[in-house]
Length: 328
Image 1 (cartoon, one colour):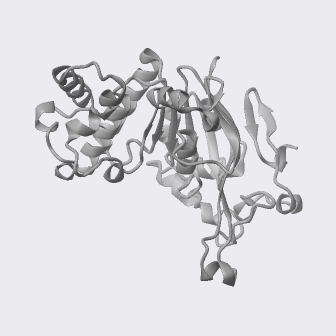
Image 2: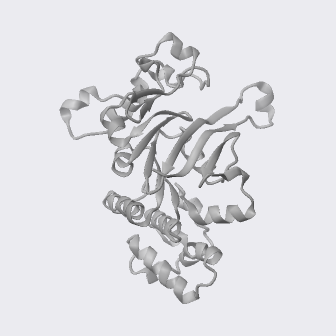
Image 3: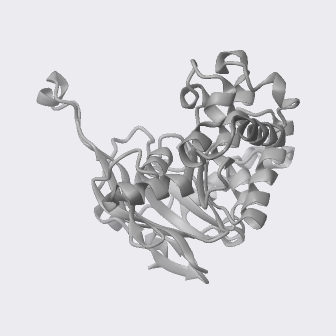
């Protein structure tokens, strides 16, 4: 499969602020993304799953160059994003979009819905008339279930519910039919009845429109539905990756197993074995450390060497890898 985008040993470290806290030693650096490497192919959907605060959003923002990395590369069509000139960046912005997690922050409260959704057209399709833009905006809003579009186009974001704003954000990202979309918790604010519909629309855009997706979520069930492949993310590091069916049906990393066991199911017999991640072993309050396995303090299978060295990726099956000393 042809690679649409490549992430090569990407790292992002947030350092301590220049403050009294720094001088007192109470603040320290945190490596939010720790050497992530993977790729997304043409027409492929890759899901990345992890708990809140694991660094998933930071990874997404790095990939669209909303943040600069500490080190590493992101390659789009073979070109390093962080070394692109102005002309190359314009092309990159045209072909790569991000659906932000919080629609309250991603939509300008002073711009009408039409102004926000038509913004990509104003930048990249300047030849279109006002009427053509209105027709395209109306089409995309209605495809997101905002019908009739005329009732929404001239409203301000503050007049819409959170779920409606989220659908506006999705419509805007899809306006130019980009080659690659990073969708950061794109359905988190939607009613359950609408989530499947929105996810199906994104899958259709990938299969029929040729758009590749990185689908970021904490919900492993949604990730299983969406992704061709799955990455499991924990404290800035990819701890398992492979085909979605392999990762969900034959999980190898202890953290992946905990995520899957934590999915609620309507089975009273299973309630006794329900595993909370903080009960998996050790203390979840242990300080963050970049030495050793990052899951060591919460792992029931922890060994001495887990605390001394960070495990590499071990081959655990066909196109299936896990970062765990249980396999090497």
